Amino acid sequence: MASSWTPCLVLLLCLTLSSVLQEQAAGKPAADDDSELRQRWSKWQAKYSKRYPSHEEQEKRFGVFRDNSNSIGAFSAPQTTTSAVVGSFGAPQTVTTVRVGMNRFGDLQPREVLDQFTGFNNTAAVLKTPPPTRLPHHSRKPCCVDWRSSGAVTGVKFQGSCQSCWAFAAVAAIEGMNKIRTGTLVSLSEQQLVDCDNGSSGCAGGRTDTALDLVARRGGITSGERYAYGGFNGRCKVDKLLFDHGAAVGGFKAVPPNDEHQLAMAVARQPVTAYVDASTWEFQFYSGGIFRGPCSGDPARVNHAVTIVGYCEEFGDKFWIAKNSWSDDWGDQGYILLAKDVLSSPNGTCGLATSPFYPTA
Ligand SMILES: *[C@@H]1O[C@H](CO)[C@@H](O)[C@H](O)[C@H]1NC(C)=O
Ligand SMILES: *[C@@H]1O[C@H](CO)[C@@H](O)[C@H](O)[C@H]1NC(C)=O
Ligand SMILES: *[C@@H]1O[C@H](CO)[C@@H](O)[C@H](O)[C@H]1NC(C)=O
Image 1 (spheres, helix red, strand yellow):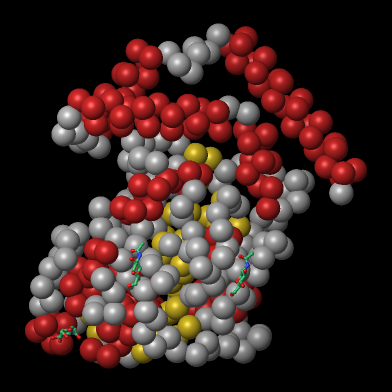
Image 2 (tube, protein in one colour; image 1 turned 45 degrees about the vertical axis):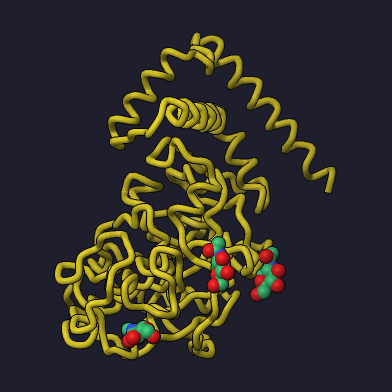
C-alpha cells in the first residue's frame, strides 16, 4: 500500500511546488486582493440579478462568494495535482482532470444548494416501486451512447428555487422515450408533476418513481407549452392531466439496483432517471471533466435526481452523461460526466446506480 502511494505523493509535491513557483513567476495577485474580488462580485451579482434585502445579508453573501472564489482558485491552480486528489476513488494513475468554476451558486454553501435546488427525499414514503426488470445479459450495449446526438434530449432546464429535481428527471426520461418511439421531441410539463403528484410534495421534494407512476396511471403527460413551469406549488389542472397529453406513458420500470452493466443496457435503450448525492462543494461548482467525487454512494444519502442520457467507455475513461436541471450555466453546459464502473462501489459514483427508473410505452 505505502509503497504504491509513495511515488504518487512525491509527484504531487513536485507538481504543487512547480505550480507555486510558476504563480510567483507570473506575478499573480494574491487571492485576498479585495478590490479585484469586489469587482468580480458586482459583475457576478449583475449577471445573476442578485439583490439582497439588507447590507448585512449582502456582506454575508460576499463572504461566501469570497470563500468559494478562493476555493475555486485553489482547486484550479495546480491542475494535475487537484485531479489526482479528487480522483482518489480510483487508482492514482488514471488522472483525468475535473474542473470547477464559478456559477449561479457562487453565494451559497453546499448545504444551501442542497436545501434549495435538489429535492429528492429518501425518507418520504415509497409508493409502489416495481420489482427490478433484468434485461437479457447480452442486450445491445454499444461502447458509447449519447441520446443528445439523436435529438432525444430537450435543452437543459432550470428547476429554480423549488425542490422539483424529481419532476425534471422524470420528464427528461419521458421526453427521451417519446422521441425514440414517435420520432418527435416534445418538451413536457414538470409543473404538472409538481401540482398533481400526490406521492410527492411539490416544491418540498419528491420522487421520480411516484411521478412516473402518476403519468403511467393517467396514460400520459401534458406538454410544457400547455402546462408551463412556474416553480411553485399550484393547483392540479385535472382536465389537462386526464385529457391533454403531449406524450403517452404506459408504465415504468426499475433497473436492478447497484448494477452498472444493467444500467448501461437500459440507457442504451432510452434515457433513465437516477438518484445521486449532490451535496458536496465539488458537485456545486463542477464545470467539466469526469467527476469521481467526493460524494456518497449510500442509498440513504442520495438527495438529488438527474437523468442519464448516455455513457461512454471507449477511450479508457468510462463515464455516464447525466442531465441536470440547474440550467446550462452549471456544469458542462448543464450536464455532468460521472465516472462509470468505479471499483470502489457497485452503487456507482454518487450512488447513481442505487435506484434508476425508466418509463415505458
Ligand atoms: C422527508 O420526508 C419526511 C416524511 O415525509 C419528512 O418528515 C422530512 O421532514 C422530509 N425531509 C426533508 C429534508 O424534507
Ligand atoms: C390528490 O389527492 C387529492 C386529495 O386526496 C385528490 O382529491 C386528488 O384527486 C388527488 N390527485 C391525483 C392527481 O391523484
Ligand atoms: C451501496 O448500497 C447498499 C444498499 O443498496 C448499501 O448497503 C451500501 O452501504 C452502499 N455502499 C456504499 C459504499 O455506499
